[in-house]
Length: 159
Image (tube, rainbow, N blue to C red; front, side, top):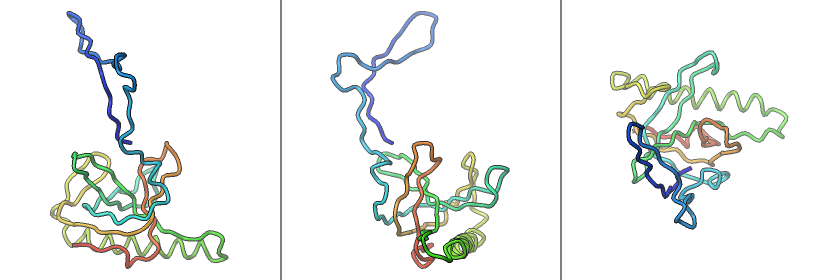
């Protein structure tokens, strides 16, 4: 979420600078942009390609698009298959689509691997722009990143 906070500065000698919500404001915390409000919204996202490598917590690499808004705030949306799990072959469809998304992303990544930089717990390739269409998924406030559900690998394009 993006919040607007009205704060008061607390200054005391020999102590670090502290802040507290400004009690003189009627609404010191305002939600400017809520990720939860984006849930189930159709979207076309554009940004740079990100790769979260496999780790003890994540069994395979995961790709994402990093979207930077006009205020410089970055959000990473993981690329995730959109599959109807009420279908009898849903698990197979999910795996096939996830593999196709991963392979298409990996191919683009490997073409420009020399421009990869470390982004903290992920790698970012500033030379690869992604355009992806799908539906935003934010089902839990504990979710690490929002996801964009993709119905077809053709909904991802790289430049």
